[in-house]
Every structure is written in C-alpha cells, then in structure tokens.
Image (cartoon, rainbow, N blue to C red):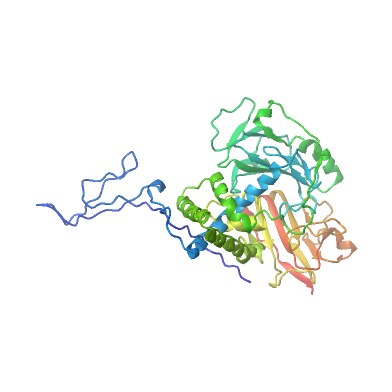
Length: 517
C-alpha cells in the first residue's frame, strides 16, 4: 500500500509584504504617471508612511497579525479539522512529555525492569552491555552500543553531564529538546574533549561555572540525553568498556564539585516495572487523554518562528472545548480516529523518509525537523530518537528486491560487494526487527551483524553476504546468519559517522534478494 504524505496546513498564516503603491489620484500638478514607492521600515520595524488617506499598514511581524476572535461559535466540524492537525503536529511533543514524566518517577538511577537505563530528572543511567530484547521503552534499538538515558527538567536547575576519555573508541551523545531536535553536539566526530558540560533551559541567565567546559542551551526545559558508546561483541571489549561508561553521568548543577565522578553501572539496581509485559512499545500517547494534556505541553514548548498562527488556531479550539463538553468529545473522537487512520500508517519504514534505492528508505532531517511535522511524527511513531543525519544515516526496508513484503516463509540474502560496505568513520550494522520493531528472540541471541562482529566470513571475491532466514543456512554460513521470525519483519541499516558517499546519497544499500521461496 502506498502511503501518501499529508500536507500540514497551519490555519491562519502571517505574511509580511512590502509592495510599491501607485498613486491613483493626485492633486494639482502631481505626475500621476510615475509610481510612488513607499518608504522602507524605520528602526522600530514599522513601515513609515506618508500622510496617505486610506492606507492600511500590512503586518511586519507575527505579533502584528490579528489572531482568532475569542468566543467565536466554532462548529464541531471546524473543531475536528483543527484537532486533526493538532494531533499530528503535537504527537511527538506529548510523547516526550510523558516519557519525561515516567523517568521523573524513578527513585534512583538504575535499570527499569532490570533492562532499561532510567533515572530521575537531570540524571542519567548507563548500561554496561548491549540493551536486552525485553525492553519496550523505544522501538528500533541497536545492539552495537552501550546505551545511556536521561531526561531533564531544566526549569528546576541546569544539569551537568560528563565526558570521559574514550580514546579511539567511537561514541556520541544524542542531546535533544522536547521536539526531539538536537541542540548540542558531543561525540568523537566533533572532537569533543573529555570534561564536564552544562545543559541549561531557555530562561537560564547564569554564568558558566568554573570547571565547566561548555554550556548548551535548550529551547525547552524538558530535554533528553542518550549516550551511545560503541562496543565490539567480544568478552574482551565488554571488560574494556566498563571503566569508561562508569564515568558517563549526569547530575544537577547543585551537586557539581568540579571533579569527574564515577559509578559502577554494572551494579545498577533494578527499578520495578509493573508494565513489563507486552509485545509493543509502551503507549506514550493515549488518544483519549491527548487533548487534556496538549494545553500544558504547548505551554512547555514555545512556538518556533512562523508557528504563532498554528498555536493561536489550536488554542482557540482548546479553549472552546474547555467550555463545551460536546466539543471536547469531538476532539477525543478525532484523536482516536487520527491515531488509527494516519499514525498507524507511519509506523512501518515505508511510511517514513525518502527512497534510497533497492527498496530502502532513509531519513534526511532526523533530529533537525524544524517545521517538518510529517517527518517528526512519523519518526516518533516508528523510530524515535534518531540521530542527526550527519551523525547517523538510517536505511529501513519492509520489502525484498521483488517488491514483496519480507516474511519468514522465504530465505533472503543481503550482499555487500567488495569495497561497498557502508562507508563510515564510526560503525555500521544490519539489524532485524519484528513487526513491532523489536528484536526477534532466537537461540543465538543475535539481532544484528556488522562492525562489532569479528567472525564474519567474506566470499572469495571479497564480498560480504548476510543470510536472513528462520533456519540455519548451514554451519559454514552460520557466522553470517541473522535469524528471522516466521512472520513479517523488517531490516534496518545503521551507518554511524557516515562518510560523504552516504551523506550525498551516492552509496546505495544492497538489494534484499530472495534465495528460497
């Protein structure tokens, strides 16, 4: 089924224009044949006009544009039309709000359910190994890195995060605001030096404390930090990484001493998880509750330049629904309908990104969405917390080279010709996800193959073939085998710190070829 991109229309847009006006009348000997151009704006930003009867001054900023009239009698149909746009636009923001609220309940930095790093606000927790397949916090995790996770409430106070000396090891911290847009860059590719760094909110006016290497400002008080530290799939590297990740920490500025702190994350305590069961991602957005939460979320996330009209139109509808139970019910109806009719179609990889060749799709503006509401929401639905494209390029596919849905009734091969592995400075991997975008449990406990694997076998011609199927392709090929479920599934290529051929779209992922039907 082809997923058509829906255009998001902000109701009531602001426009500023400066146009030459031609005199339509004149007095006495005035020359009516020559156009008379009005003066440009003065230093106040207002258009300086001559004493010209009848001229209406055009808006020159968003603040000059008249907004919706309070108390207007809004119909159910109008409320639902705006409500649908509001649901699509605000879904990732509400999602982030609820994730932060869940983390804020953590009694201490630890592991939720024994598998997911979780910490109170302005702190983080780290894993010392790959993430377990049982986690349901976020879809499309990888098993190439030791993850960390932390959310902030910078309205309380700034947060300090630590960067240890990782040496030659690849690492990157993803640091995003409530829109999931990156606002800080920290990692090996940025030559970030070991040290102590400060995250501050939009209203912070303090001075950089002594001992802090840099200050990064978020446009929202709610933000998130996700350290990723690459690790080979060997016992030796598991041991080597521990003293490094033990120095990956975040804590409130009030606890800052100027010294690098450490904690043994391999001994992190378990935080009970009453919602541990389930096959799908935790429902971070509940349609029935969405419009009850949206007003507070809009207060948390101020409009981007150009979004003022969208905010005004949505607030008008929310205010009307607050006074009219029938309109409130109409908004709930549209939330439930939009989740089912539109959001569900965004989940699979075919509902996101652009064509990358051979049936794969790739994201172009992850973590830099701006006003691309479609892409932000589609990513939040199917693969939230994607890194910026300059940090990581993602390629996902649901289809084989014949256009058929990838499924366990067939056996597939993915062959990278000699010299055509993903060109990266960091690492690459090919991951298999089940229908819910989580790992498929298997006897090898193998969910991806790539740079981390030291026993991959190349062909005589120097190519690398990965076999994707439910049963073993044979003992001589088993090191290159990705075990698959019997049902439908998807494949995903990661390229961390991509080189120019990937960034410029000159490198194409290989076909997913059917070798047995």
